[in-house]
Amino acid sequence: MKILAIGRNYVAHIEELKNEKPTEPVVFLKPDTALLQNNEPFYYPEFSQDIHHEVEIVLRVGKEGKHIEPKFASRYYDQIGLGIDFTARDIQTRAKEKGLPWETAKAFNGSAPVSKFLPVGEFADLKNINFCLEVNGEVRQEGNTSLMLYDFDYIVSYLSKFFTLKAGDLIYTGTPAGVSAVKVGDRLVGFIEKQEMFNFEVK
Image 1 (cartoon, rainbow, N blue to C red):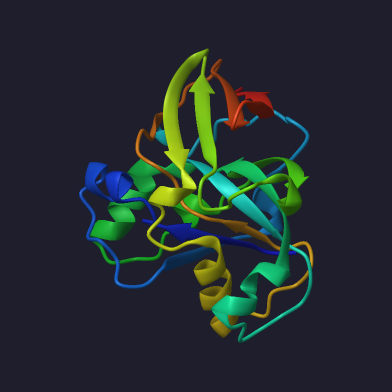
Image 2: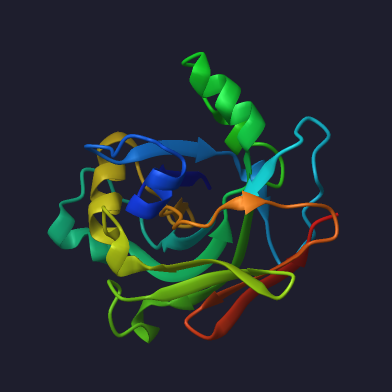
C-alpha cells in the first residue's frame, strides 16, 4: 500500500503558513513505514525540534484504478478515516528555502497516524463532514470538508492521472487551520462529527 497526501487544500491553512494558493493539488507521498495504527504512540524524533500536527480526513481506496474521471471517482474509495500528517516544520522550512523536496519533513517513521475507518455509506453528505483534533482536551483544529479547495472526487481523479490507485491505499486530503507544535506527553484525540476516531500519546 502507499500513502498519498494533499497539501494546501484549505484556504485558512494556506494563509496561516503564508503559502501561495495552488492552481492544482499539491501532492506528496509517505511510505508505509510512516503509518501508525491502533492508537500506537508517536515517538518524537531526535532530528527535529518542531513537530506539528495536521489533522486530515483520510480516504481508503477500495479498488484499483487509473485515469479515473471525476464522475466515477466515488466508486474508488469505500471508507473514511481520520489521520495526522506529522510535519517536521523546521526541516520543511529549510527545504522550502532551498527549493528542495519535503520527504524528510513529511515521510519519516510514524509520521502518519491513522484511525479506524467508517463506511462511506454512513455519511449523508461527503461535502459536509465536520472533524476536529483535541490536544490535551483543548480543541486545536476544526474543519469541514465543504471548505476544501479540491473535493474527494477531484482528488481521486487527479491522483489517478499519475499513480495507479490500488485497494488499501490511503489518501490524506489536507488539513485545516490551527496546526501547531506537539511535545512529549501530549495526548491527541481526533473526532469525525462527534465520534472519537483516534486517541494516542506523544512519547
